[in-house]
Structures are given as structure tokens and as C-alpha cells.
Image (tube, rainbow, N blue to C red):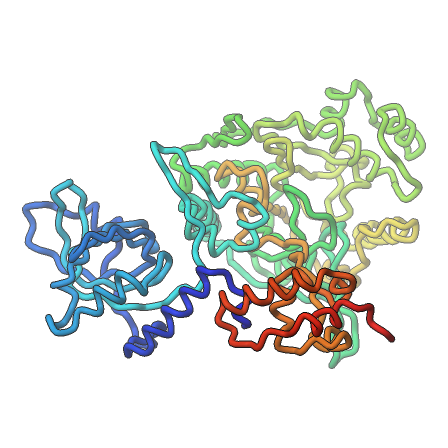
Length: 577
């Protein structure tokens, strides 16, 4: 990396790095550092009357107050922060060599560096529980300065708050915004709670393929890749449903999977192209049983994660206390639009959509119309957990027909805070009916619906061997965690959400500048001065360019021979092809 690409702080830190090495201190040691205590536990367990406790801790130095022969610093480990007292006469091995304190600690260490401390726990005169250092070890030198977040009277100043920066540099976000780590700790607790619930019922966690020859199980646009050895297209999983149902057909009574799914669709506050879904399938059950099962699971997870069945999001209090409200989809549409769509055909539904001022196109079928009406006119009204049940058959190609109305299916979606959280069926296990549903999806695909399902003949074959009555449920884990942690965007609950490519400034290569006679060694300095492409030199003020090069040469100790004004004037002439 060229020194001109660095800012002043980065240059200082690299110089400190080299000075440490000259002193015989390795800033990136390979040996294990045997940590045996953590900040929060030290503070919680300390008692003044106890015997002196020796500890070994490690973490980032986040602040430092130097006061002559003694100083205080704040160390941040994986659990929190703790104050450390550093006295020269304790950490320096002999009076003849005080460099560890006078040079390394006071001058060469920077905020953000990782250090190890061995010492004992005590309470300062100000009453703060601290560690009295007897040994200091440099564990990792940071070469970029952290954002300095200031706090006074509970108010944060100069915070690292820009969402795009935070998502791109989550590693910095986690260091300087301590509350962010809590979101992801709660996410893991939610996984653990769900697993405990399923395992307690005797259900088996399994794994199914991510690369699939047929992207089945959901109406979604897949990502496509190519397998070179087999010379075939493969698709990233859009859902794991059909594989899990194959396992039910194979004799397992209950299976579940936390799966990474991928859908080549839009990105917004609630959608990421890569997301986590939990799907569970249980034999000999129906969607009524699954509603009871689901609401109990959600209540349990909320209690395990937050210690309460209530959450606050968007200024609203949402209760996960079972049981949840239940309403049929057609009744919901009637309630919120005043229109009863029972028995309507495709043409009639198209007219309803137009009457409701909704956009329609020729690719849309009966199921798509109903889905759009509910999504636009009804869904947002359900803030408290509500099961929307009994979907029209055209919307549910993998779902069993309703036992009392063949125009409907035994399906529910759980809506919370105006968004779908869960989707569940009494699963279709009639192979003839399933094949007919797949063929209907094929017709939609031929009309131009790029989210219509593929026909999976192997899955039909599995049904032909026989699958018991089964209920299945899928829950969007990311959205569930959003609710549990009070977040309004999916990016806040993903460590590394998908982002647009980071914008970079285009810079010409040195050989382009050479066409104007610019020596290669002066190209970085010109670009530092703002002439990032060779054509920017054309017609520029040669005197100003030369003055800028002189200042950079001096400031960064480049040691280059300054070009003459005549040379610079040559650079500013139009390039002759």
C-alpha cells in the first residue's frame, strides 16, 4: 500500500508498529494468551472482604488517561468493559528498562489495540472495581482508528450511526455500538429455544441440499449457477419443503431444518436475497394442530429470549401470549374491502382489482389476484398475531384441499405487525392432485410468471410411494428476530446483509499517465492531489500542480526529485493519439 493512500492516523500507527518490532516486541504474537476472567463477571463477583484475586484478561484498549508514572485505561472484552490501573513500577521488569510503560504504553499503543493484562482485582478510591496490572502484553496492533463515540449524561455524540457504513463494516459496528451485539445474542437464543421445543417433542433436525436441480417448494425466482463436471444448471435453494416431505415419506415422523434460502428478487427493509427459514413437518397432524403448536412455540421463544411475552416495535406493544386470533382469508378481504370474492372467477377478480385501484397485468391468474388484494388491502391491519386461514386453492399448489370446501385449502399464514411471519399447511399427499397443481403452475410460467413453481417429478414419485397425512410450517427466522429485538429492518438482524457494490473512485493506471510524460513515481502524488485520471491534467494550472507535489513530497518524506515547471507543463498538454 502506498503511503499516500493512508491518512495521518494510519501512518502514525504503522510507524508505531515498526518501532515496536525494532524494540523486539512482536505486535501479532502467535502464542496462546490464557484468558481466565471477563469484565462483567469480575465486577459482579467482587467483594471487598475477599482475598486478593489474580486474573488474566484481554481485549481492546478503548480509552486511556495518562498521569505520569501511573495511568488508567478501559479494556473492552467480549462481555463488556472494565477499568485497568497501569503503574510503571509494576509492569516494567526492571528499573533499568522502563520502555514498556514510557514508550510502548504511553506512545506506541493506540485506541483499538488488543492487549493482555495480568494482575489482581481491587476497588479504587473512587469506588470503581478495576484490575491492577502487573503484566502487559501486546496482542494485536490496530492500523485503522476506530470511530470515537462520545457519551455525556446518557447522550451519544459523534456516533457510528450511518446505516450503510454500519452494515458494510459490521466489525466496527459491533465494537463501538455495544447494543448491536445484544441483537445477535438474542438471535442465537431464539435458535436455541426453538431447537429445545422441537427436540422435546422428539423431532429430528436434518440437513437438505442447497444446490438443487429443481428449485421447488416456493413460488420464487431462483439464483442459477452451473455445475461444470456434470454440465448441468443448478439452482440455489428457494425452499427446503419438498426434501423434508420426502423424509416424511421415508418414515420419519417429525423433521425440521434451519435453512439458508436464496431468492433472486428485490431487496428492501424486510427482504434480503439470502435469508434463514425454519421449516418443520410432522406426520399425522393437520393445520389446526399446527396452529396450536406454532403459537405455543412463539410464546415460549419470546419468554426465553426476552423474559416476557410482549415486545415493543414501531411504538406498538405486541403480545405473543397464546392463543392468537384466527380469521379466514375471504372473510378478511370482505371485512377490509366490503367485497365478498367467494366463487369469483379470474375475470371477476380482475375487475375487483381495478375497482380497488390496483395494478394488474396479463401474467396474473386467479391466485395472484387474491394474493394481491389481501396483501394491499388487508395484511397491514393485523398488528397483533393473527392466523389467516383457508386460502383459495389457486394460491397454494402444495396444500391439501379444505375438507369441507374444495375451492379452499387447509393453509394458514401468521401475520404479525402487518407482515407474514409463518406459513403452514395440511400438506397435499395425493400424488394425482399434486401433479395437476404442478401443471397449473406450468401454465402460469408459460404466461410469463417467473415466480411460478417448477414441476418436480421426483417429488411426485415420492408421493406415489405414499406419504402419511402431514402438517408443515415455515417461519422466517430473520423477521421473527426483528420482532423479538424491536428492529424495523431486516439488515439490523443480519451480521452481513447483502449490499450494493461499494462505490470506488476510478483511478487511471500509471501507463495512462505515461502517455503525457508523467514518471510512474509521481502518479500516486498526482492522484492524491485530485488528478485521479490522466485527462484531468489536460489544461490544468502547471504551477498549482507543481506546488501541490512539492507539499506532498515534503509532508510524506517521499524523497522524490521535484519535476521542473516545464516538465509539469508538458503533462498538462492534450494527449496526442
